[in-house]
Image 1 (tube, protein in one colour):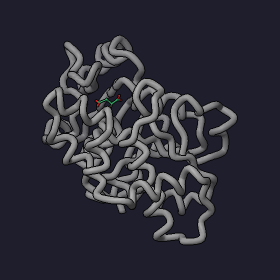
Image 2 (tube, protein in one colour):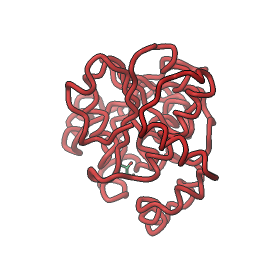
Image 3 (spheres, protein in one colour):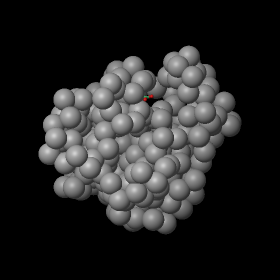
Length: 233
Ligand code: MLT
């Protein structure tokens, strides 16, 4: 379990990396793919996104800056916006403050998966199937530690341990697991900085939704075509 700033090429080479941004980028990616989106293309800037739309007008532009939809974009970064039929079969170009940055930074990992509470168990199964050293990478907020991502990582560790009790864990993975097991994830999340920010912006419903455990069996994986859903457990 580590944060975006610790993701050096050396740290990720040959490993499975699970990108975690519970609020809200990884929950949005999981929701979009679970609801029929073809692939999510993570980009760093709105300009990059507009460029892709020029080349393929059928793509959906989604994402946020300061939590809000970017002017000229089709959708924001609320996962609840990615359940409608207009996303089915289409590609989503997504740019968010921390989550898509983490994914781009982690792209040299042997395998990059996207994890959230919504698909914790499915990701845990895939991690075990891949049989490699695994990093659970927490997006945090502008390189600062974020409790919501730590709790999310801990929930994935718990699922891994459930299927493979003898797995070897770092101390920080152990700590994340214990924090996530210490109570209702919704309550743990509610105390975090990012949650208070989202509440101020009126996204309380996102918080409840992103706290739901194992709602989907999808395992988003980064390929040369973007983030695709290759597994549905
Ligand atoms: C991010 O990538 O920083 C987040 O997903 C921000 C958010 O929309 O809450």
